[in-house]
Length: 408
Ligand SMILES: [Zn+2]
Image 1 (cartoon, helix red, strand yellow):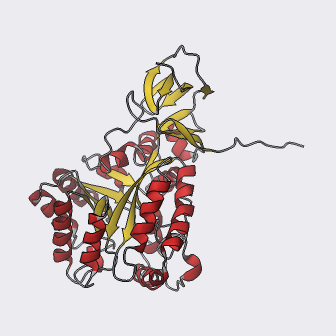
Image 2 (cartoon, protein in one colour):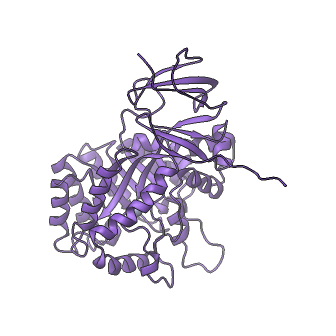
Image 3 (tube, helix red, strand yellow):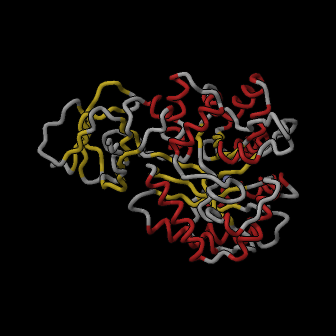
């Protein structure tokens, strides 16, 4: 088969030996120590080729609204209220423009698959959903976008929300999310989300246990419902900051329960750091659950961006390598094996979380690849390696020009 492109002398995540990667018709068709073919080529000189980064949790619809939200105390409650007020004025064009700006940053940092949470309720209706659905179609050349519709401000306490969620599911939402901590009746909220997920055969992704009180956890009920509905492997929970406030033994116990039920965990370091521990004046708790410790117990985990330039997180450039570095730093994950795990937490593990079946640098898979300016997986995280260019289904989707120093 004639090749469209050969990546020469690439280093892969799971092997020290450099190799060539042959690409044809959008797919990886050959991986060998040397491919003899007269095809267009990129010489990588031993640089790392990873599968495209996978973002499992981001809010495109409410990104980039700092200019219209006032923050005073920086709490979760304040952030929810500020966005609740702002989103009444959201139009489809406005959501599209802001979401586009955020999505393009993610693409330029090497993300090729993404799950975005989109708010649906009587304030915003389906305007956010419709805008992101259009964006999904317009950017399919660069990224596979999953839309998870969810009720940020509660379900049972917010008449009309469930009907809108169901309408979004009928119109092609990829999955359903929940947010029981804002509901006046969390158990019914979780039960209804599972019922909708079952009805439309959708994976489920909750915002969950987002405080530092470990005396009770909604994850117990989510694990119970996951087993009762036989939905193991199809349920994820995001934040779960309560698990940053328990000792190792308690963490191991919960981890075993999560693994047993098939419930995955997404940790959101930027938001969790920004919003947790606001009751403290000093010696702030980090409030970030140790994802790399959960892995040892068989829990599928990911690190993700969550919010960008809004009252939940007034920071962000959508770089997942940055998120891996930030997490490694605050989780004190400095050993080589831990740093490598941090790279797994933005690539192979989130791919498993979103149930991607054709992911990874392997023959037959889509050529969704990122070339990093690094020759070592652990050092790529330690040094925030620059993604140099990326491919989506074999076609180049972004390029960063190499840095030049201009000596006198
Ligand atoms: Zn979120």
